[in-house]
Length: 440
Image 1 (tube, rainbow, N blue to C red):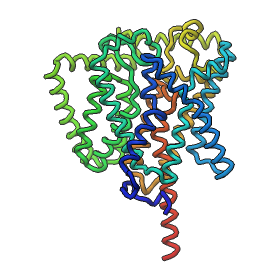
Image 2 (cartoon, rainbow, N blue to C red):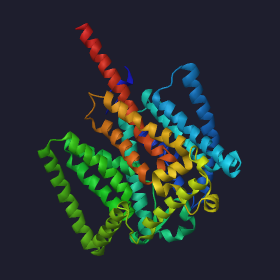
Image 3 (spheres, helix red, strand yellow):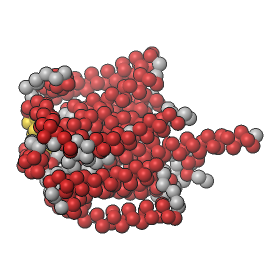
Image 4 (tube, rainbow, N blue to C red):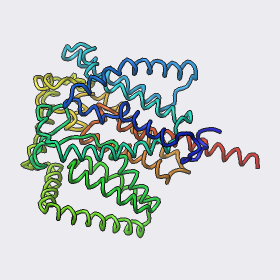
């Protein structure tokens, strides 16, 4: 039986739960930056990741040799991963040409990005029935709650000011309107959980999922304090709801969400009355920033300063607009461009690092989910399929503000696995329908 005809949830595999746990560990170590983001706090973590590079290169060679010369086929997902593997090399060459940094040294600084090839292994495992799509979803949900408890524990028990010396490495940031130093943890798997639970509530009327979604949203608002992340998540969620549901259903859903959200705000108020006004001020600053007004908030106003540095750099070096300057180390950036953190300024940072060529490549990846959405009819309202689609939409919106996808497309490929799976599943479904019609 072809994998595509198997039900999405089945316990006919031996060691079903153990496979989920194994996939959870594999994703934790090889297809996420959950541990890597702590490398500035502990150098041994970065060393462990680098030590895995020989395995990555060997696996990449074997995998693509098998796919190209033995199977003689590359699916669209393999092609996207392969092209993403070339981006660190592209960045290293550009840094070498512009700043005379040795290519191998530049590649060493970008080595963790090669781990994206492990996403191909996960997809291949699904296609070859080693794991099911449902096990993949469960593993990501476990990772979501693992991140939730890990990040919450660290945020509430360890002062981020301890790591202020690594301010430019991404572990911590500084924002007076958010209380000073704070952690800047990756939200990829938390977003996965939010989208899954929201869609499970919207499409399947699962109120337990609504409750779990509110918990994750509360973390995002009160602990993570990621404003652009929250906006990036909420926009595709509510757009989907307004497109799919009838107006009376929308009112019902919004009322239930408002009641639970209101209850959460009341609880937060009784825990600390100042937290509500503090949070409201944060989002007021956010609105002022996007209206182009001075906010008085150092972090927001600094982003305009960083974009001014980029503008001035391109005025002096217009030839770098096409290919960008790569991803140089922070000291090189300070000397040649200014106090710019690429991931802070979204698409502007992407233009500086990747150039017009890199931007075209990155945004071309987002055309594929649109193509699949137009093709998929039968599974269009499937919770898992829409989790993949809305995940891609969330990453796209995030790219405009934070631009992480320009430097590490892990978060995009997390959802693209699902999109590609359903493209093939839809194809096999209609093929089966045609065969049934011809034989009847």
